[in-house]
Image (cartoon, rainbow over all chains, first blue to last red):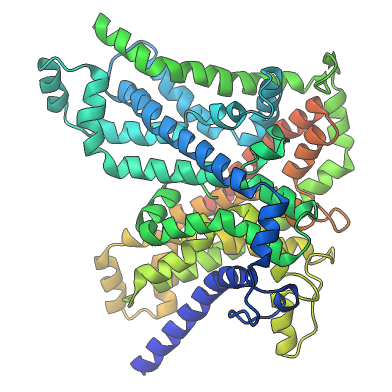
Length: 271
Length: 287
């Protein structure tokens, strides 16, 4: 009886896991199939081909989009870590006049839905002349209120004695932050790094508004434009272009799944 | 003290400036745009209550709002049930628990654009995987994304699938907080599995359920890339979402004032709905 229940449990879990994994496996295998085979449920291509990748690479600048995405997401992540830590350090450990106001403003900003500010931000970018520039993709994301609140929370728990003795040694505040606080804050830094990078990597609505030039598009945008504009032509080509976006993420996820789950579930950000 | 003030303003000053330019200004300017007519090329003109009047009588906007409620009425309950069921299963003694957890979480890390493109293929009427499976077990194929009755439910199921791993983690965290002693006590009392679930587990998870309802509702109002990629808002505008309408007003029709008005209205609707949900759940619990 007990054995039977175990079997039912694992069978159910396996079916559930298959519904989450199989579509991605099917997607990956379809990119190696010729068009006639794409409709098949089988995962092993009958006539293995790389044509979908050749076509995709030739028809749209996916190499450039990969570079753009990597550059934009990396810059944003570094900025959020460095600038966010500096802000959070000041908000957690230094006394200054505007501190309560800054705290309140940070929480208030998080409560405003993004749709409210989307259009005014877009008109701001247009007026700054930033349409079709990296600045439009990066600058509005240089600071992140969620990240600052998380870092601040963590920094509040670090003992004051560490700061006091470092100050006695004549260390500057930024130096205390980066040489004493940072090594102690690795868990929270990795959480912030992952959800920031993933948010930037997967973002599609904002690039669709501020970038029209194909060579400046990030992967999700180019992929969307390519698949919708009919540039892909066949399902295999369109899925092959999606693979450029997915493979780096899945590889990172395979190695760091625990960190990914902790980070993305903890931040409330969903790709 | 003065030195500290100076260091602090150097460290926190840039963020304060950033907030002013990229948060405070857009919020204020959104409210200004509501009263303007602006195509971004010519100078903006004062529109009075024109945008608001248009919004109130705009069938397309209210169609999009209604579509969102159709989406939510399927997505939110389905999300709670699936996330809770998977979390309760994962909370047992299991071999390879981290593998199962990682499997359910996989779609969360994948870009929404990719998921939409992939599921367009899965839902395709003639060659789609789902219809192939239906035909194999003797059913007739369903035109998922081209039938006005099934298109939005199909998208709601897909979004539930994409996000369920996220909510499983929230429920799993909640399950850790149910004290062992309570579980043992209720077992000694001879409660059935259903009674244990109904009178201990479910009430204990109320904070998590409120969170799931709130987050999945907000997420539902932000629906954009799925209809943009999969249906373009059709068939018969049944999958048109509010954000897609907002985007088209700004990008395709160059109506900044009206697009901003939609954004402000959407923020208000989200606020009212989330508030009403919390009141309702609070009342239901008191019963």
